[in-house]
Amino acid sequence: MAYAPVLNEPGLPPIRINLLSDTQTRPSAAMRQAMAAAEVGDEQIGDDPTVNALCERVAALLGKQAAVFMPSGTMCNVAATLVHCRPGDEILAHETAHIVALEGGAHAALGGVQVKTLHGDHGQFAPDRLREALRPATRNQPRQTMVSVEQTSNLGGGAIWKQSALESIVEIAQANGLVTHMDGARLLNACVATGLSARAMAEGWDSVWLDFTKGLGAPLGAVMAGSRDFIDEVWRWKQRLGGALRQAGICAAACHYALDHNVARLAEDHAHARALANGLSRIPGIAVQLPDTNLVFFESSGTGLASEALVAALRRRGVLMCVMAGRIRACTHLDVSAAMIEETLAAIGDILQVAAAAPRLSSPAPRRSVS
Image (cartoon, rainbow, N blue to C red; front, side, top):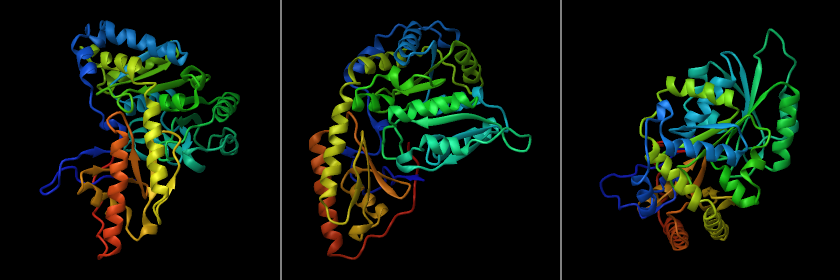
């Protein structure tokens, strides 16, 4: 589903332009200073003031009663599922959702739940499709317990769920006794792009989380919010999963810094993604999905060069991208500049020109997954 070339092997130059993922960001000097100065305590027993303040801040930001600091976004999704569902239950989600495609089958392996996948363009299902997928409760079929969305949709091209669709999904779920969960890994990208608040987007959703390790530039951490009772149960699963931490205020300080300094600037990433997409659209044979946010998906087969071959050729020039679900993905973030976008477009143009005049490059085998 998601592949990248080997990052380092003999003969490869250093990576100069890293478009693999927004998880590739490095903490800035100012963020590192904030981390070094953080007041800390034992997070596991609720004694870390920086973590506690972050949880209160995110709960308020999302309009929820309480929140909990987690090591990763995947752990947020897994813990939410384990609280909301019981073995044998069924989740409804898009067929390309992160919980389906990129979490190693954790929800089945750890929770014994299955996912009924829904089709739709750009990683999103229509509210009517959700309604059609619901069925009367019987003893012969799994209990449908939870509906999940991913904001923004990763494999859908960083597409933003419309507010009207989110509200309709909540209405349908509540009318049918389902809980609602929002994978908010790039929720703040959606907020910056639309001008809507995080509270408005999360309205009515029983659980929602933010990832600080993507465009926000922190080295570790996600925060999940919901009702106090829900968060209490998440804590139990956090302990079981080995996610309870000690002096985590060092990492929470990076998240505070990100909220203070790295949210509005997400608009720069979106502008760089549009510039990349516009440049790609002018290259004959490349088909590109115009981005809503910071993810650019495109296909190169029309040029005569396979996606894996183009990604490999870019890596030999110090430019890193990946192939996901058959398309090349480039992800802009705070360590990517406008000049890097121009250099990347020039490199792609040069590679395709060389390929047109020479034997076709062979495609390397898939290597490793990213999110």
